[in-house]
Length: 578
Image (cartoon, rainbow, N blue to C red):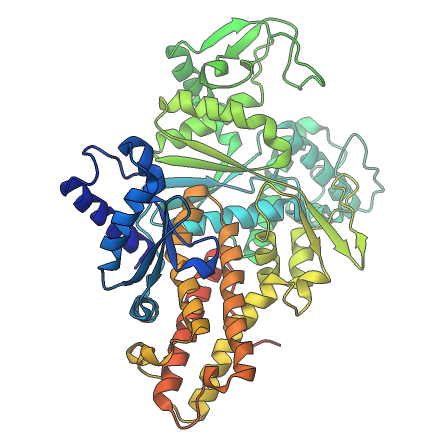
């Protein structure tokens, strides 16, 4: 049940009747007609822009359209009043029975809020995709949480979602990892070692070195790289991916696909992708002008093989093969996305860190070219996370081996707190993670405030059961006994849930779910607090079982919506606070 969609359908029906009656000209498009909550709740329950968006194409005054529309809307049993405001906005107040139907639906329909927006379309969401050179750190955590919540949101909205991790195991950084593990291997044999040439000195590699010793003994001692590099590289990558999988599991992230970059090399996949572009006339030999500012690693002042990415909105054409025949970093990325397109996904989403902003246009150009503009690619950038503790910033340096790991974060505050707080800002806005603030029990801490609302409902349910009250058929409660303005405001906020799901899914914005849950929790807490002064608003009414059941049905429905929302965010609803 999507009440806003239902009322919009009513508006469209009335506009169609007006067209039939000759009050509106034929041929008008109603696509831009919207029904949404008014900016000021005092103006009503819902508002429509119909008169404003139709006035120009109809060559009529907005007020004339609004007046005619209002009389037709008010004739519907669901609408108590329809009032024209300003130049032609139309505000509606709905009958209390409408809110009762929302509560009933939330209690009886396990899919309340779910949408068929996606219509089963196949969506690939790639996220995290950290280099397999160490455990995940806090910089990866935001992308992991955002991508996972986005995937859950899209699935909730009716898409067939594949969660994917791209293992960057084809570059030089994996050779550096192998050399670093080899040093730990030597250390495990009692040798003193020095981490030089950019090798990774982190303690997380100590176990890998010991495990390598346990596997091969002294076979690699005093041997050159030609003997051990390839095997140690594979061993180290596997060890790091095991660690990464464990890190992801600690925060509730489980991937459907782990795709290896290495699988693109020596298999003809890169060549096949480039041939596809070449067959379309998009590959040529040329020399690029030097870019302004810092030169990128793949730029050469000589002729090389280029992709005409400017044909698809990029700023410059991009090199895919160097003058010596070696592939640039962009070439395997093209091949990887060619593989995604070949797997018949209807749409792709990549979640990148903010430092990959320069890749957005070139990757969109590549996918557009490879798919013939048939597969959209949305790239979401996640900004940095700044950690604070005891008022002081935490520093992070992977090269020094002193970075803050994802597991450190989860061990400190828990998965639920970590995930929820990572979604309290839009993905492209910087995020401060203050250990003290995310664990304080106050209204200023969103995760506590939402969890407290859910726990409060369950405390009422426990007390009602202990008092011997029958709660087996809350869906059948007489909700006309819960029609105070504060109770209706809570039901109205709950009715926004299906609409919110579609808005968030269309915009690929899971943070909207966190914001909505906070607002819904605020309405519940407000009603609870009013009950401190107004006895008639308390959820358990002594000597009035019917009124108690109605009020409890309302807040039980709210807890159902909170539970659905938290599930999308990957957060476990609390039934009691500790």
